Image 1 (cartoon, rainbow over the protein chains, first blue to last red):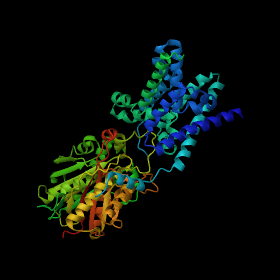
Image 2: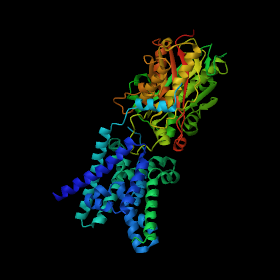
Image 3: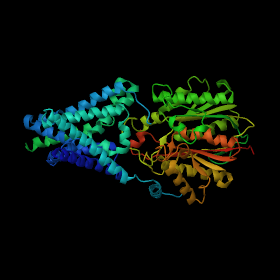
Image 4: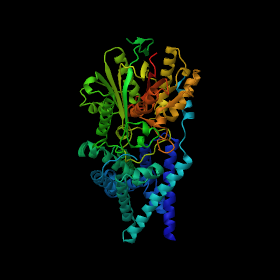
Length: 122
Length: 147
Length: 338
Protein backbone atom coordinates (compact mmCIF):
# COMPACT_ATOMS: atom_id res chain seq x y z
CA UNK A 1 0.00 0.00 0.00
CA UNK A 2 2.79 2.38 0.96
CA UNK A 3 4.51 1.63 -2.30
CA UNK A 4 1.30 2.37 -4.21
CA UNK A 5 1.09 5.79 -2.54
CA UNK A 6 4.73 6.41 -3.56
CA UNK A 7 3.83 5.71 -7.16
CA UNK A 8 0.68 7.80 -7.00
CA UNK A 9 2.63 10.78 -5.62
CA UNK A 10 5.30 10.42 -8.31
CA UNK A 11 2.63 10.15 -10.99
CA UNK A 12 0.63 13.19 -9.89
CA UNK A 13 3.51 15.57 -9.16
CA UNK A 14 5.49 14.49 -12.24
CA UNK A 15 2.33 14.77 -14.32
CA UNK A 16 1.68 18.26 -12.98
CA UNK A 17 5.16 19.45 -13.98
CA UNK A 18 4.48 18.19 -17.50
CA UNK A 19 0.98 19.67 -17.63
CA UNK A 20 2.42 23.09 -16.70
CA UNK A 21 4.94 22.65 -19.52
CA UNK A 22 2.11 21.88 -21.94
CA UNK A 23 0.19 24.97 -20.81
CA UNK A 24 3.30 27.04 -21.55
CA UNK A 25 3.58 25.47 -25.03
CA UNK A 26 -0.11 25.97 -25.85
CA UNK A 27 -0.71 29.43 -24.42
CA UNK A 28 2.63 31.27 -24.62
CA UNK A 29 5.09 31.77 -27.45
CA UNK A 30 7.75 29.83 -25.53
CA UNK A 31 9.46 27.23 -27.71
CA UNK A 32 10.23 23.79 -26.24
CA UNK A 33 13.95 24.70 -25.95
CA UNK A 34 13.09 27.83 -23.93
CA UNK A 35 10.79 25.82 -21.69
CA UNK A 36 13.56 23.32 -20.93
CA UNK A 37 15.94 26.15 -20.06
CA UNK A 38 13.31 27.81 -17.84
CA UNK A 39 12.66 24.52 -16.04
CA UNK A 40 16.33 23.95 -15.25
CA UNK A 41 16.90 27.52 -14.08
CA UNK A 42 13.67 27.37 -12.06
CA UNK A 43 14.95 24.17 -10.47
CA UNK A 44 18.21 25.88 -9.47
CA UNK A 45 16.34 28.83 -7.96
CA UNK A 46 13.75 26.70 -6.14
CA UNK A 47 16.55 24.49 -4.87
CA UNK A 48 18.50 27.52 -3.64
CA UNK A 49 15.43 28.87 -1.86
CA UNK A 50 14.98 25.51 -0.15
CA UNK A 51 11.54 24.99 -1.67
CA UNK A 52 12.36 22.05 -3.88
CA UNK A 53 13.80 19.65 -1.29
CA UNK A 54 10.48 19.13 0.53
CA UNK A 55 8.91 18.38 -2.85
CA UNK A 56 11.58 15.74 -3.58
CA UNK A 57 11.00 14.21 -0.14
CA UNK A 58 7.28 14.11 -0.84
CA UNK A 59 7.11 12.99 -4.48
CA UNK A 60 10.43 11.20 -5.07
CA UNK A 61 10.91 10.58 -8.79
CA UNK A 62 7.92 12.83 -9.47
CA UNK A 63 10.20 15.73 -8.55
CA UNK A 64 13.63 14.39 -9.58
CA UNK A 65 12.75 13.10 -13.09
CA UNK A 66 11.41 16.40 -14.54
CA UNK A 67 14.15 18.82 -15.59
CA UNK A 68 13.47 21.01 -12.55
CA UNK A 69 14.97 18.06 -10.65
CA UNK A 70 18.11 18.46 -12.75
CA UNK A 71 18.28 22.11 -11.68
CA UNK A 72 17.66 21.15 -8.07
CA UNK A 73 20.53 18.68 -8.27
CA UNK A 74 22.82 21.42 -9.63
CA UNK A 75 22.01 23.74 -6.73
CA UNK A 76 22.31 20.96 -4.17
CA UNK A 77 25.71 19.98 -5.57
CA UNK A 78 26.95 23.56 -5.48
CA UNK A 79 25.77 24.06 -1.91
CA UNK A 80 27.56 20.95 -0.66
CA UNK A 81 30.73 21.77 -2.61
CA UNK A 82 30.84 25.36 -1.35
CA UNK A 83 30.46 24.02 2.17
CA UNK A 84 33.51 21.78 1.69
CA UNK A 85 35.73 23.74 -0.69
CA UNK A 86 34.61 27.35 -0.53
CA UNK A 87 34.53 29.38 -3.74
CA UNK A 88 36.01 26.53 -5.77
CA UNK A 89 32.83 24.61 -4.99
CA UNK A 90 30.81 27.15 -6.96
CA UNK A 91 32.71 25.97 -10.04
CA UNK A 92 32.83 22.22 -9.36
CA UNK A 93 29.64 21.50 -7.46
CA UNK A 94 27.00 21.63 -10.16
CA UNK A 95 28.70 19.48 -12.74
CA UNK A 96 29.88 16.98 -10.13
CA UNK A 97 26.35 16.38 -8.89
CA UNK A 98 24.89 16.06 -12.38
CA UNK A 99 27.81 14.22 -13.97
CA UNK A 100 25.96 10.90 -14.13
CA UNK A 101 23.02 12.26 -16.13
CA UNK A 102 25.13 14.33 -18.52
CA UNK A 103 27.71 11.63 -19.13
CA UNK A 104 24.99 9.04 -19.62
CA UNK A 105 23.30 11.26 -22.21
CA UNK A 106 26.58 11.84 -24.07
CA UNK A 107 27.73 8.22 -24.03
CA UNK A 108 24.36 6.62 -24.78
CA UNK A 109 23.76 9.31 -27.40
CA UNK A 110 27.07 8.54 -29.03
CA UNK A 111 26.51 4.79 -29.03
CA UNK A 112 22.92 5.11 -30.27
CA UNK A 113 24.02 7.41 -33.08
CA UNK A 114 26.69 4.92 -34.13
CA UNK A 115 24.40 1.90 -34.10
CA UNK A 116 21.12 3.18 -35.53
CA UNK A 117 20.27 4.68 -38.90
CA UNK A 118 18.30 7.91 -39.18
CA UNK A 119 14.84 7.17 -40.53
CA UNK A 120 11.89 8.91 -42.13
CA UNK A 121 8.94 9.98 -40.02
CA UNK A 122 6.14 7.60 -40.81
CA UNK B 1 -4.43 45.87 -50.15
CA UNK B 2 -5.47 48.39 -47.54
CA UNK B 3 -4.57 46.35 -44.53
CA UNK B 4 -2.30 47.00 -41.59
CA UNK B 5 -0.17 44.25 -40.11
CA UNK B 6 -2.23 44.60 -36.97
CA UNK B 7 -5.51 43.94 -38.80
CA UNK B 8 -3.91 40.99 -40.52
CA UNK B 9 -2.74 39.58 -37.21
CA UNK B 10 -6.35 39.65 -36.03
CA UNK B 11 -7.56 37.92 -39.21
CA UNK B 12 -4.83 35.33 -38.85
CA UNK B 13 -5.74 34.64 -35.25
CA UNK B 14 -9.34 34.03 -36.24
CA UNK B 15 -8.42 31.75 -39.13
CA UNK B 16 -5.88 29.64 -37.25
CA UNK B 17 -7.26 26.64 -35.38
CA UNK B 18 -6.20 26.54 -31.74
CA UNK B 19 -4.33 23.70 -30.15
CA UNK B 20 -6.81 21.31 -28.60
CA UNK B 21 -5.71 21.97 -25.04
CA UNK B 22 -8.45 19.76 -23.61
CA UNK B 23 -6.50 16.93 -25.26
CA UNK B 24 -2.86 18.06 -25.04
CA UNK B 25 -2.76 18.99 -21.34
CA UNK B 26 -4.30 15.71 -20.02
CA UNK B 27 -2.04 13.75 -22.41
CA UNK B 28 1.03 15.57 -21.12
CA UNK B 29 -0.10 14.94 -17.54
CA UNK B 30 -0.65 11.22 -18.06
CA UNK B 31 2.43 10.44 -20.16
CA UNK B 32 4.70 12.62 -18.01
CA UNK B 33 3.19 11.01 -14.92
CA UNK B 34 3.85 7.53 -16.30
CA UNK B 35 7.49 8.36 -17.03
CA UNK B 36 7.95 9.66 -13.46
CA UNK B 37 6.22 6.54 -12.07
CA UNK B 38 8.63 4.35 -14.03
CA UNK B 39 11.42 6.46 -12.49
CA UNK B 40 9.98 5.80 -9.03
CA UNK B 41 9.71 2.07 -9.75
CA UNK B 42 13.39 2.04 -10.76
CA UNK B 43 14.39 3.90 -7.58
CA UNK B 44 12.45 1.38 -5.49
CA UNK B 45 13.99 -1.52 -7.41
CA UNK B 46 17.56 -0.24 -6.90
CA UNK B 47 16.90 0.42 -3.22
CA UNK B 48 15.51 -3.10 -2.92
CA UNK B 49 18.84 -4.26 -4.39
CA UNK B 50 20.61 -2.52 -1.53
CA UNK B 51 21.44 0.96 -2.85
CA UNK B 52 21.14 4.12 -0.79
CA UNK B 53 18.29 6.50 -1.73
CA UNK B 54 20.54 9.06 -3.40
CA UNK B 55 22.53 6.51 -5.38
CA UNK B 56 19.34 4.73 -6.42
CA UNK B 57 17.92 8.02 -7.65
CA UNK B 58 21.04 8.70 -9.74
CA UNK B 59 21.08 5.21 -11.24
CA UNK B 60 17.36 5.52 -12.01
CA UNK B 61 18.05 8.74 -13.93
CA UNK B 62 20.84 7.03 -15.87
CA UNK B 63 18.48 4.15 -16.66
CA UNK B 64 15.81 6.54 -17.94
CA UNK B 65 18.42 8.26 -20.12
CA UNK B 66 19.40 4.85 -21.49
CA UNK B 67 15.78 3.89 -22.21
CA UNK B 68 15.14 7.20 -23.92
CA UNK B 69 18.27 6.86 -26.07
CA UNK B 70 17.20 3.37 -27.08
CA UNK B 71 13.63 4.43 -27.91
CA UNK B 72 14.99 7.39 -29.88
CA UNK B 73 17.23 5.08 -31.89
CA UNK B 74 14.29 2.77 -32.57
CA UNK B 75 12.21 5.82 -33.72
CA UNK B 76 9.64 5.18 -31.00
CA UNK B 77 10.28 8.19 -28.79
CA UNK B 78 9.19 10.79 -31.36
CA UNK B 79 5.95 8.89 -31.87
CA UNK B 80 5.23 8.88 -28.13
CA UNK B 81 6.10 12.59 -28.11
CA UNK B 82 3.51 13.29 -30.81
CA UNK B 83 0.89 12.42 -28.20
CA UNK B 84 2.82 13.23 -25.04
CA UNK B 85 3.94 16.78 -25.88
CA UNK B 86 5.42 18.33 -22.77
CA UNK B 87 4.93 14.96 -21.06
CA UNK B 88 7.88 13.62 -23.02
CA UNK B 89 9.73 16.95 -23.15
CA UNK B 90 10.00 17.90 -19.47
CA UNK B 91 11.28 14.61 -17.92
CA UNK B 92 14.97 13.77 -18.18
CA UNK B 93 14.04 11.40 -21.03
CA UNK B 94 13.23 14.49 -23.11
CA UNK B 95 16.68 15.87 -22.40
CA UNK B 96 18.22 12.57 -23.52
CA UNK B 97 16.07 12.57 -26.67
CA UNK B 98 17.25 16.11 -27.44
CA UNK B 99 20.87 14.90 -27.22
CA UNK B 100 20.46 11.64 -29.14
CA UNK B 101 18.24 12.88 -31.99
CA UNK B 102 20.69 15.42 -33.47
CA UNK B 103 23.65 13.08 -32.90
CA UNK B 104 21.89 10.42 -34.94
CA UNK B 105 20.50 12.78 -37.55
CA UNK B 106 23.73 14.66 -38.28
CA UNK B 107 25.91 11.56 -38.36
CA UNK B 108 25.69 11.90 -42.14
CA UNK B 109 27.93 15.00 -41.88
CA UNK B 110 30.69 12.95 -40.22
CA UNK B 111 31.53 11.61 -36.77
CA UNK B 112 33.34 14.74 -35.61
CA UNK B 113 31.63 17.80 -37.11
CA UNK B 114 28.30 16.03 -37.56
CA UNK B 115 27.62 13.67 -34.68
CA UNK B 116 30.11 15.22 -32.26
CA UNK B 117 29.48 18.92 -32.86
CA UNK B 118 25.72 18.82 -33.35
CA UNK B 119 24.92 16.63 -30.34
CA UNK B 120 24.07 19.64 -28.18
CA UNK B 121 22.33 21.96 -30.65
CA UNK B 122 19.03 21.52 -28.79
CA UNK B 123 20.03 20.40 -25.29
CA UNK B 124 23.16 22.56 -24.99
CA UNK B 125 21.33 25.66 -23.67
CA UNK B 126 19.94 23.58 -20.80
CA UNK B 127 23.45 22.86 -19.57
CA UNK B 128 24.71 26.39 -20.29
CA UNK B 129 21.96 28.10 -18.30
CA UNK B 130 21.62 25.43 -15.62
CA UNK B 131 25.33 25.32 -14.82
CA UNK B 132 25.71 29.10 -15.00
CA UNK B 133 22.77 29.58 -12.64
CA UNK B 134 24.25 27.08 -10.20
CA UNK B 135 27.67 28.79 -10.31
CA UNK B 136 26.04 32.16 -9.59
CA UNK B 137 24.24 30.53 -6.67
CA UNK B 138 27.59 29.21 -5.41
CA UNK B 139 29.18 32.67 -5.60
CA UNK B 140 26.24 34.19 -3.73
CA UNK B 141 26.60 31.54 -1.03
CA UNK B 142 30.30 32.44 -0.62
CA UNK B 143 29.83 36.21 -0.76
CA UNK B 144 27.17 36.31 1.90
CA UNK B 145 28.62 33.50 3.98
CA UNK B 146 25.39 31.58 3.77
CA UNK B 147 26.98 28.22 4.45
CA UNK C 1 7.61 38.13 -78.77
CA UNK C 2 6.18 38.47 -75.26
CA UNK C 3 3.88 41.36 -74.53
CA UNK C 4 4.44 43.16 -71.28
CA UNK C 5 1.16 44.76 -70.24
CA UNK C 6 2.03 45.95 -66.75
CA UNK C 7 4.80 45.97 -64.21
CA UNK C 8 4.26 42.29 -63.49
CA UNK C 9 2.07 40.69 -66.16
CA UNK C 10 3.47 39.29 -69.40
CA UNK C 11 1.23 37.91 -72.16
CA UNK C 12 2.78 35.14 -74.25
CA UNK C 13 1.26 35.51 -77.75
CA UNK C 14 2.77 32.30 -79.14
CA UNK C 15 1.18 30.31 -76.31
CA UNK C 16 4.06 27.91 -75.64
CA UNK C 17 2.87 24.36 -75.12
CA UNK C 18 3.63 22.00 -72.30
CA UNK C 19 5.07 19.12 -74.32
CA UNK C 20 5.38 16.75 -71.39
CA UNK C 21 5.05 16.71 -67.64
CA UNK C 22 6.01 14.21 -64.96
CA UNK C 23 5.59 13.83 -61.22
CA UNK C 24 7.35 11.67 -58.66
CA UNK C 25 6.26 11.15 -55.06
CA UNK C 26 7.32 9.40 -51.87
CA UNK C 27 5.47 7.08 -49.53
CA UNK C 28 3.03 9.51 -47.91
CA UNK C 29 2.14 11.01 -51.31
CA UNK C 30 1.47 7.47 -52.55
CA UNK C 31 -1.05 7.03 -49.75
CA UNK C 32 -2.81 10.28 -50.64
CA UNK C 33 -5.86 10.93 -52.82
CA UNK C 34 -3.81 11.92 -55.91
CA UNK C 35 -1.66 8.76 -55.93
CA UNK C 36 -3.09 7.41 -59.18
CA UNK C 37 -2.10 10.54 -61.10
CA UNK C 38 1.62 10.23 -60.26
CA UNK C 39 4.09 8.82 -62.79
CA UNK C 40 6.35 7.28 -60.17
CA UNK C 41 5.88 6.58 -56.49
CA UNK C 42 8.64 5.31 -54.25
CA UNK C 43 7.90 3.74 -50.87
CA UNK C 44 11.56 4.07 -49.98
CA UNK C 45 11.89 7.79 -49.24
CA UNK C 46 15.69 7.43 -49.12
CA UNK C 47 15.53 6.64 -52.87
CA UNK C 48 18.36 4.20 -52.21
CA UNK C 49 20.73 6.97 -51.10
CA UNK C 50 22.78 7.43 -47.93
CA UNK C 51 21.65 10.93 -46.98
CA UNK C 52 18.40 12.85 -47.33
CA UNK C 53 20.08 15.48 -49.50
CA UNK C 54 21.26 12.79 -51.89
CA UNK C 55 17.77 11.28 -51.78
CA UNK C 56 16.30 14.59 -52.92
CA UNK C 57 18.75 14.85 -55.81
CA UNK C 58 17.85 11.32 -56.85
CA UNK C 59 14.18 12.26 -56.64
CA UNK C 60 14.80 15.16 -59.04
CA UNK C 61 16.85 12.94 -61.31
CA UNK C 62 14.00 10.41 -61.47
CA UNK C 63 11.61 13.21 -62.32
CA UNK C 64 13.72 14.81 -65.07
CA UNK C 65 14.45 11.41 -66.64
CA UNK C 66 10.75 10.60 -66.61
CA UNK C 67 9.69 13.84 -68.27
CA UNK C 68 12.33 13.42 -71.00
CA UNK C 69 11.15 9.85 -71.54
CA UNK C 70 7.51 10.95 -71.79
CA UNK C 71 8.44 13.66 -74.30
CA UNK C 72 10.58 11.23 -76.26
CA UNK C 73 13.51 13.65 -76.03
CA UNK C 74 17.11 13.44 -74.92
CA UNK C 75 18.91 16.07 -72.79
CA UNK C 76 20.57 17.44 -75.93
CA UNK C 77 17.13 18.52 -77.20
CA UNK C 78 16.64 20.87 -74.25
CA UNK C 79 18.15 24.36 -74.55
CA UNK C 80 17.88 25.43 -70.96
CA UNK C 81 16.65 24.17 -67.62
CA UNK C 82 15.29 26.08 -64.63
CA UNK C 83 15.48 24.11 -61.41
CA UNK C 84 15.11 24.76 -57.72
CA UNK C 85 14.47 23.23 -54.33
CA UNK C 86 14.37 24.21 -50.66
CA UNK C 87 17.90 23.31 -49.64
CA UNK C 88 20.69 25.78 -48.95
CA UNK C 89 22.45 26.82 -52.16
CA UNK C 90 19.85 24.75 -54.08
CA UNK C 91 21.99 21.64 -53.84
CA UNK C 92 19.05 19.33 -54.55
CA UNK C 93 18.91 20.73 -58.08
CA UNK C 94 22.62 21.24 -58.66
CA UNK C 95 23.53 17.68 -57.73
CA UNK C 96 20.40 16.28 -59.33
CA UNK C 97 21.32 17.90 -62.65
CA UNK C 98 25.02 17.02 -62.60
CA UNK C 99 24.76 14.46 -65.39
CA UNK C 100 22.17 16.31 -67.45
CA UNK C 101 24.51 18.41 -69.57
CA UNK C 102 21.84 21.07 -70.14
CA UNK C 103 22.46 24.83 -69.62
CA UNK C 104 21.30 25.27 -66.02
CA UNK C 105 19.72 28.10 -64.09
CA UNK C 106 19.18 27.46 -60.37
CA UNK C 107 16.23 29.19 -58.73
CA UNK C 108 15.24 29.80 -55.16
CA UNK C 109 11.60 30.71 -54.74
CA UNK C 110 10.90 28.54 -51.70
CA UNK C 111 7.59 26.76 -52.32
CA UNK C 112 6.81 29.06 -55.28
CA UNK C 113 9.59 27.59 -57.41
CA UNK C 114 7.35 25.52 -59.70
CA UNK C 115 5.41 28.57 -60.92
CA UNK C 116 8.61 30.60 -61.05
CA UNK C 117 10.49 28.05 -63.17
CA UNK C 118 7.49 27.35 -65.41
CA UNK C 119 6.95 31.09 -65.96
CA UNK C 120 10.58 31.69 -66.89
CA UNK C 121 10.70 28.64 -69.16
CA UNK C 122 7.56 29.85 -70.95
CA UNK C 123 8.91 33.37 -71.42
CA UNK C 124 12.15 31.95 -72.84
CA UNK C 125 10.27 29.77 -75.31
CA UNK C 126 7.81 32.53 -76.28
CA UNK C 127 10.72 34.76 -77.22
CA UNK C 128 12.53 31.95 -79.05
CA UNK C 129 15.49 32.29 -76.70
CA UNK C 130 15.01 28.58 -76.19
CA UNK C 131 13.24 26.04 -78.39
CA UNK C 132 12.59 23.76 -75.47
CA UNK C 133 12.98 24.56 -71.80
CA UNK C 134 12.72 22.32 -68.77
CA UNK C 135 11.25 23.46 -65.46
CA UNK C 136 11.95 21.23 -62.48
CA UNK C 137 11.50 21.46 -58.71
CA UNK C 138 11.48 19.18 -55.72
CA UNK C 139 11.24 19.06 -51.97
CA UNK C 140 11.91 16.26 -49.49
CA UNK C 141 10.33 16.09 -46.05
CA UNK C 142 13.45 14.79 -44.35
CA UNK C 143 16.02 17.13 -45.89
CA UNK C 144 13.74 20.14 -45.30
CA UNK C 145 12.97 19.10 -41.73
CA UNK C 146 16.62 18.80 -40.72
CA UNK C 147 17.51 22.10 -42.37
CA UNK C 148 14.56 24.22 -41.24
CA UNK C 149 13.30 22.56 -38.06
CA UNK C 150 14.50 19.68 -35.94
CA UNK C 151 16.23 16.34 -36.40
CA UNK C 152 13.65 13.73 -37.40
CA UNK C 153 13.98 11.65 -34.25
CA UNK C 154 13.44 14.65 -31.98
CA UNK C 155 10.18 14.41 -30.10
CA UNK C 156 8.50 17.68 -30.92
CA UNK C 157 4.81 18.36 -31.30
CA UNK C 158 3.50 20.06 -34.43
CA UNK C 159 0.94 22.81 -34.02
CA UNK C 160 -2.42 22.60 -35.87
CA UNK C 161 -1.32 25.34 -38.29
CA UNK C 162 1.92 23.56 -39.27
CA UNK C 163 2.23 22.14 -42.77
CA UNK C 164 3.88 18.95 -43.98
CA UNK C 165 6.71 19.26 -46.52
CA UNK C 166 5.95 16.97 -49.44
CA UNK C 167 8.50 14.43 -50.63
CA UNK C 168 7.80 15.00 -54.28
CA UNK C 169 9.07 16.44 -57.53
CA UNK C 170 7.42 17.80 -60.65
CA UNK C 171 8.81 18.76 -64.03
CA UNK C 172 7.54 20.09 -67.35
CA UNK C 173 9.08 20.60 -70.77
CA UNK C 174 7.90 23.76 -72.51
CA UNK C 175 8.15 24.16 -76.28
CA UNK C 176 6.19 25.25 -79.33
CA UNK C 177 3.44 22.71 -79.85
CA UNK C 178 -0.11 22.35 -81.16
CA UNK C 179 -1.22 20.18 -78.31
CA UNK C 180 -2.69 21.44 -75.02
CA UNK C 181 -1.90 22.52 -72.35
CA UNK C 182 -0.67 25.99 -73.32
CA UNK C 183 0.80 28.79 -71.24
CA UNK C 184 -1.06 31.99 -72.10
CA UNK C 185 0.39 34.48 -69.66
CA UNK C 186 2.50 34.79 -66.55
CA UNK C 187 2.49 37.24 -63.67
CA UNK C 188 5.57 37.65 -61.50
CA UNK C 189 4.77 38.31 -57.87
CA UNK C 190 6.15 40.88 -55.47
CA UNK C 191 7.47 40.15 -52.01
CA UNK C 192 4.74 40.84 -49.46
CA UNK C 193 5.28 40.74 -45.71
CA UNK C 194 2.42 41.27 -43.29
CA UNK C 195 4.50 40.60 -40.21
CA UNK C 196 3.75 36.91 -39.63
CA UNK C 197 6.57 35.42 -37.58
CA UNK C 198 5.26 31.95 -36.82
CA UNK C 199 7.22 29.46 -38.90
CA UNK C 200 4.50 26.93 -38.08
CA UNK C 201 1.97 29.08 -39.91
CA UNK C 202 3.50 29.71 -43.31
CA UNK C 203 0.14 29.70 -45.06
CA UNK C 204 -0.74 32.91 -43.23
CA UNK C 205 2.62 34.43 -44.21
CA UNK C 206 2.06 33.69 -47.91
CA UNK C 207 -1.64 34.53 -48.29
CA UNK C 208 -1.09 38.32 -48.75
CA UNK C 209 1.37 37.68 -51.60
CA UNK C 210 -1.13 35.35 -53.28
CA UNK C 211 -3.85 37.95 -52.89
CA UNK C 212 -1.63 40.66 -54.38
CA UNK C 213 -0.65 38.59 -57.43
CA UNK C 214 -4.23 37.46 -58.15
CA UNK C 215 -5.48 41.05 -57.93
CA UNK C 216 -2.68 42.29 -60.17
CA UNK C 217 -3.37 39.66 -62.81
CA UNK C 218 -7.15 40.08 -62.82
CA UNK C 219 -6.80 43.87 -63.06
CA UNK C 220 -4.12 43.74 -65.78
CA UNK C 221 -6.10 41.32 -67.94
CA UNK C 222 -9.47 42.84 -67.10
CA UNK C 223 -10.88 39.46 -66.13
CA UNK C 224 -12.78 38.08 -63.14
CA UNK C 225 -12.58 34.70 -61.36
CA UNK C 226 -15.60 33.64 -63.45
CA UNK C 227 -13.40 33.64 -66.56
CA UNK C 228 -11.44 30.69 -65.18
CA UNK C 229 -12.40 27.14 -64.32
CA UNK C 230 -10.18 27.01 -61.30
CA UNK C 231 -7.61 29.03 -59.40
CA UNK C 232 -5.07 26.72 -57.81
CA UNK C 233 -2.78 28.08 -55.16
CA UNK C 234 0.29 26.18 -54.07
CA UNK C 235 0.64 25.24 -50.44
CA UNK C 236 -1.34 27.85 -48.54
CA UNK C 237 -2.87 25.01 -46.57
CA UNK C 238 -6.03 25.36 -44.57
CA UNK C 239 -5.21 28.61 -42.75
CA UNK C 240 -3.65 30.40 -45.72
CA UNK C 241 -6.51 29.40 -48.04
CA UNK C 242 -9.20 30.81 -45.80
CA UNK C 243 -7.15 33.98 -45.30
CA UNK C 244 -6.67 34.39 -49.06
CA UNK C 245 -10.42 34.11 -49.69
CA UNK C 246 -11.07 36.62 -46.94
CA UNK C 247 -8.41 39.05 -48.20
CA UNK C 248 -9.84 38.96 -51.73
CA UNK C 249 -13.38 39.36 -50.41
CA UNK C 250 -12.30 42.65 -48.86
CA UNK C 251 -11.44 43.75 -52.42
CA UNK C 252 -14.78 42.47 -53.70
CA UNK C 253 -13.27 39.52 -55.50
CA UNK C 254 -14.93 36.20 -54.75
CA UNK C 255 -12.87 33.12 -55.52
CA UNK C 256 -14.42 30.85 -52.91
CA UNK C 257 -16.14 28.64 -55.50
CA UNK C 258 -13.18 28.61 -57.90
CA UNK C 259 -10.34 28.00 -55.50
CA UNK C 260 -8.45 24.97 -54.36
CA UNK C 261 -5.04 24.62 -52.80
CA UNK C 262 -2.40 22.04 -53.76
CA UNK C 263 -1.51 21.64 -50.08
CA UNK C 264 -5.08 20.54 -49.39
CA UNK C 265 -5.27 18.22 -52.41
CA UNK C 266 -2.09 16.16 -52.04
CA UNK C 267 -3.00 14.54 -48.74
CA UNK C 268 -6.07 13.25 -47.00
CA UNK C 269 -5.98 15.54 -44.00
CA UNK C 270 -8.37 13.41 -41.96
CA UNK C 271 -6.22 10.30 -42.24
CA UNK C 272 -2.66 11.43 -42.86
CA UNK C 273 -1.68 13.60 -39.89
CA UNK C 274 -0.46 16.54 -41.98
CA UNK C 275 -2.25 19.19 -39.89
CA UNK C 276 -2.95 22.28 -42.06
CA UNK C 277 -1.92 20.54 -45.32
CA UNK C 278 1.10 19.95 -47.53
CA UNK C 279 3.89 22.39 -48.39
CA UNK C 280 7.30 22.48 -50.03
CA UNK C 281 8.04 23.18 -53.69
CA UNK C 282 7.40 19.53 -54.49
CA UNK C 283 3.82 19.85 -53.28
CA UNK C 284 2.50 22.36 -55.83
CA UNK C 285 4.90 20.96 -58.46
CA UNK C 286 3.63 17.41 -58.15
CA UNK C 287 -0.04 18.41 -57.94
CA UNK C 288 0.40 20.53 -61.09
CA UNK C 289 2.27 17.79 -62.93
CA UNK C 290 -0.05 14.99 -61.89
CA UNK C 291 -3.64 16.14 -61.55
CA UNK C 292 -3.99 19.71 -62.85
CA UNK C 293 -2.17 19.44 -66.19
CA UNK C 294 -3.91 16.14 -66.93
CA UNK C 295 -7.32 17.76 -66.38
CA UNK C 296 -6.39 20.67 -68.67
CA UNK C 297 -5.00 18.33 -71.31
CA UNK C 298 -8.18 16.22 -71.42
CA UNK C 299 -10.33 19.35 -71.57
CA UNK C 300 -12.10 18.94 -68.24
CA UNK C 301 -10.76 22.39 -67.41
CA UNK C 302 -10.21 25.06 -70.06
CA UNK C 303 -8.58 27.93 -68.21
CA UNK C 304 -6.65 27.62 -64.98
CA UNK C 305 -4.62 30.04 -62.92
CA UNK C 306 -1.79 28.21 -61.22
CA UNK C 307 -0.30 30.24 -58.43
CA UNK C 308 2.55 28.87 -56.34
CA UNK C 309 3.40 30.69 -53.16
CA UNK C 310 6.67 30.77 -51.25
CA UNK C 311 7.75 31.70 -47.72
CA UNK C 312 11.14 33.31 -48.20
CA UNK C 313 12.65 33.02 -44.74
CA UNK C 314 15.63 31.14 -43.35
CA UNK C 315 16.29 29.70 -39.89
CA UNK C 316 18.82 32.52 -39.40
CA UNK C 317 16.39 35.31 -40.24
CA UNK C 318 13.78 33.78 -37.93
CA UNK C 319 16.23 33.52 -35.04
CA UNK C 320 17.02 37.19 -35.55
CA UNK C 321 13.33 37.94 -35.04
CA UNK C 322 12.48 38.77 -38.66
CA UNK C 323 9.01 38.14 -40.02
CA UNK C 324 8.35 35.88 -43.03
CA UNK C 325 8.25 37.52 -46.51
CA UNK C 326 5.88 35.82 -48.93
CA UNK C 327 5.89 35.57 -52.72
CA UNK C 328 3.45 34.25 -55.31
CA UNK C 329 3.98 33.76 -59.04
CA UNK C 330 1.09 33.10 -61.40
CA UNK C 331 0.88 31.11 -64.62
CA UNK C 332 -2.25 31.11 -66.77
CA UNK C 333 -2.56 27.67 -68.33
CA UNK C 334 -5.19 26.98 -70.97
CA UNK C 335 -6.63 24.21 -73.08
CA UNK C 336 -6.70 26.44 -76.17
CA UNK C 337 -4.38 28.96 -77.80
CA UNK C 338 -6.90 31.71 -78.38
